Length: 218
Image 1: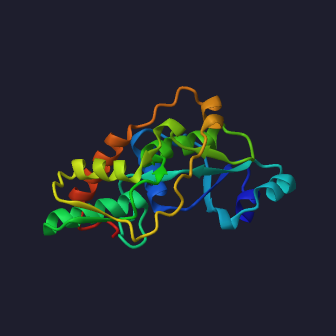
Image 2: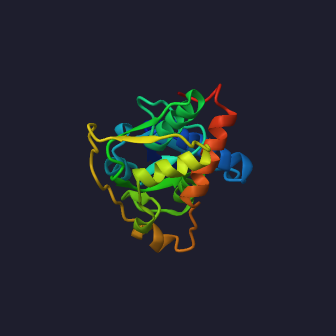
C-alpha cells in the first residue's frame, strides 16, 4: 500500500485475493480490452489495508469490494477446502467417474447467492474506474437469485450428466441457513448490469473443469 501512495494517481482495490478472481480479471483485461493505456491498478487482501487511514493521509481513493460466493473456471476445486460449488463439481465428477452415489454434506436447504467469475471481473474493473467511494460495495446477484444448495447440486448434476444417486448427509451441519446480501447499492450505480444465469455459469464451469481436469487446482 505504501508503494502505491508514492507512485502517483492510481486505484487500489482491496479484495479477498482469490486466484479465481485474479484469473477472471486477467481474462477480461486480455480478451475484452479491459485495461486502458496509462492505467495502474493494485490488488491487496483485506488484511493489508486500512482504507480510511490511507485515504485521509494521502488523499487517494482506495476501496474494497465484497463479492458473494463466486463460481467459474480456474477456481480451487478441492473437496476439502474449495469454494462450495467448485468442491461439489469435483465431487460430482468423481462420483460419475467411479459410479458411486454423490454424498452432499447437510440437508441441501441452506440458500446462497452465486456470481459468475467473469461477471465479477468486469464489475471489479468498473469499480476501479468509476466507483469513487471508500465505503465497500457488495458485488452480487440479486436476492431473488438466491438458490438452495440442493438446487445448485441439481444444476451441477445436469451439467456433468450425472445420473446416479444423490445422498444428503443430514448428520453433517448445514451451517448458516441464509447469508443473503443486498446488491441495491450496485444497482443504483449500475441498473443496466445483466448477470450470467447460474445455469449457464455452472455449465461453463463444469465444461472447463472437465476439459482442464489435469491442470485444475484440486
